[in-house]
Image (cartoon, rainbow, N blue to C red):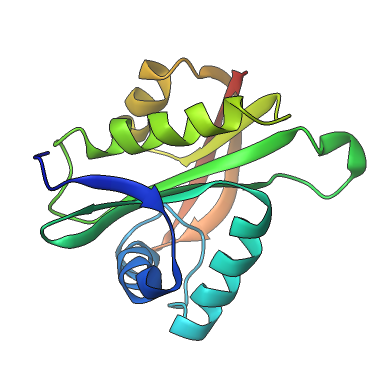
Length: 165
């Protein structure tokens, strides 16, 4: 990170960069269970829906938007209104620069200012970097769902970690 790094709320002009980052993971990773790349129009719709209710931030530096993080509704039943699922994606090649922890910390700080009580992180396994990031921020292991997704030719487990605010 350097002096030109900036964490800020998402805006419309970030859509293509976010789509490009996300679609890399759609195609090459089990970090998301989507298997078909998302269009720019679809990504803009998703961003617009999320940012109406929850924090959505990007990490920008001299290379442009290199990471993003947001909270979203976990389940639709009313008793879940105080629980969110958090997500973070860092552009390949920008890992290991403390971008993730800085951006995710900002997201959690913003959630603490709201009525949100519980933050859940769903992590496709294996993903030691994401587990470590969540643990550094105080998330605790809540459980593992076995073989709930099939992608890239194999069954994938998902760990859930939770942070009570």
